Length: 398
Ligand code: PXG
Image (cartoon, rainbow, N blue to C red):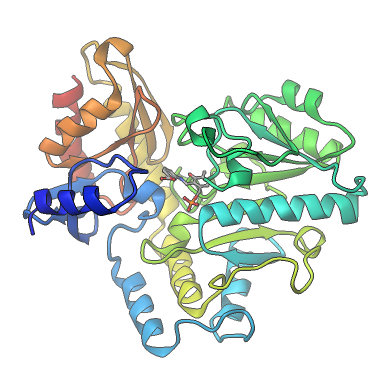
C-alpha cells in the first residue's frame, strides 16, 4: 500500500484525535526514517524526546530482543529478575531513594500527584481532602481528566468536565506568585523545567531555584516533570540541573523507554514514596521485565555515549547558527541543548505551514504552539546531518 491508501484507512477507521503530517513511516534507523513510498526523512522531532537515542539504537534493540526472548511480563503480583537491578540503577542514576515505575508520562504525573497528596496528609499533616497542588500556566503534563483539570489549553478541557479540584495555576517560574499562592494546605509545586509544549519556554536564570527555596521554606514538595526535558535532551542529564536544583520528586518517561517501549517512573525520597502501602496504587505493566531491561540499557547508553555533553555542544552551536538566518520570518531562536524553538513573526504565518514545506525538503518537524517550530533531533545526530538540516532550514525560513 502507498501512503495515500494508508491515509484513507487511517481516516476511515481511526478516531480523529490527531492531525499528523501526511507521511506514513515504515522504517527507521538512527536519525533517518523512510516512508512507505520510499522517501527518506531526517527526524527532527524524535517522538517528542522518546527517541533521544535515535531509531533502533543497536544496544537498546539488542536488550529489548534478548529480554523479549526470555521473559516479557509477570505483573507485580510476582517479582522478576530485571526489577531489582532496575530499581537500584535508576535510583542511583537520579540520586533518589526510591522509584515507582509506570508506563506512560501521564501515569507518572498522576503517580506524583497521588504521592504528594498522600505525603501531605500522612507526613505534613494537611487536613483530609484539603491538599492543594500549584501548577504553572502554559503547562503540558498529559491528558488524563485530573491532569487536564489544570491545563493551559481550553481545547484540552472542552467537553471533558467535570474536573478534579485541588489545583491552583500561577505564572511559570514566578517566585512571587508562588509565595502568594502557598497556603497551609499546599503540598507541592508541579512544574516542567522548560515548558516544551508551551513553546520551548526557558525560565529566567535563577527563577526556578528561587521557587525551590520557597518550597523548602514552606515544606512544599518541588515536583519536576522531566518527561520531555530529562535524560540528556537539554545538555544536562536533567534540565533542572541548569538551575542547580535537586527536585523532591522527579518524573521521567519518553526516552526512558529507549524509543522502543513505554516506560515512565517517579523517583523521590523514602519520606515521600514511602507513603504508599501495598494496594494503594499500581499498574499492570509497570515494572515489567521488558520495560526494566530496556530502561536499564537506556540509562547505560546515556552515560556511555556522553549524550548530555553531545546535546549541549551540538545544541549551542546550532542555536548560534540558526540565529544567523536572515530575512523577516524568524522572531527568536531559543532553547537548551537540542530542545530548540524557532519563534516566527505572525506575518510569516503559522509554524505548521513550514513543517509541511520542510517535509518536501526531507525533514520531519513539528510545531509546538502556533508560531513556534521545534527542532529536537535524536541526540545521536552528527554534525554533518545538522549541517544538512541547517541548509534546508535556512532555505525555508530565510
Ligand atoms: N509531561 C510532559 C512534559 C510531556 O511533554 C507528558 C507529560 C505526558 O506523557 P504521555 O506519555 O502520557 O503522552 C508529556 C507528553 C500528545 C503529546 O500527543 C504529548 C506530548 C507532547 C506532544 C504531544 O499527547 N508530551
